[in-house]
Amino acid sequence: MTTEEKLMHFKKFAIATVTALGLASTAPAETLTFVTSTPGGSWYPAGGAIKTAVEDLFDDIQINIRPGGGLANIKSISLKKADLGLSSTISAVDAHLGNPPFDEPVTNICNVAYLYPQVLQVPVRTDSGIESFEDFAGKRFSVAPPGTTAEQILRMVLESAGLTYDDLDQINFSSVSDQSNMMKDGQIDSVFLTTGVPASLIMDVGSARDLRLLPISDEAFAFLKEKNAGFQRTTIPGGIYKGMDEPVQSASFGTHVIADCDLDEEVVYKITKAIYERLSDLGLAVAALRNTTPEMVRQDVGIPQHRGSAKFFSEL
Image (tube, rainbow, N blue to C red; front, side):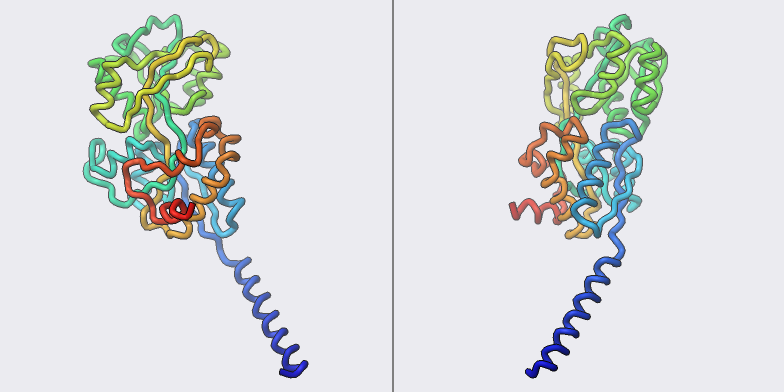
């Protein structure tokens, strides 16, 4: 090949390379809808932190965060209204098996990555006279809106005590920020939370009012466990919250990322990689994730694993 031919060959290669790079840089990013929780809930910042981790590592994926709730997120994905979501492991298993409140099995939700345990936390005002769940009769209560995992579990807990919403003086379906304000203003006696420890609401309200945590009794836990085997016995350590120095028996389940099983394998591979490799960054943004280990992220949760995340974990 002559010098002139070599120069011409190099020019063609350079033009092709620049063209390819230009096409790559202008190619539209994959835009995904990620349903989390209402603003103020623990899932909302978790979703935002995952969005940041993914978009920092991969410029071909863009994630739009949308509000939602545990049961609502599963429904949104099943109806193809969302690509990704946060869910509780107990709700995902119920959906997969077609257990109530689902009328039939939901076949297109897959697990992506486990994040952290959610703990049942029931702060009550110390002057409320509430010593057990049976004492909620005639009291004022707040929980997340219907369609959330917390609201579903509250119904179970009340049922374990022989109560329904009709037995309460008042039931408010509110955001975490509204619950905090109502609790501080004395408008409600208690809030039912399913979130990581520490819970921001308890920290906030505890700075203005004297609170204590209501334990989940052995009888109530057995009732929950019979309803869904995914519940685990958990102890909330003493000293986490102001004025609560003794450990409190509770129950927990997992928070995890789910996806439409039809979502592209390579896209889910990248999302899983971002969660796994940026776990320490996620912990800085979300307190509940600070104790999550890489081994926890890849654990089986009882529903099918998405092929994209399965591929990533198989390469570790």
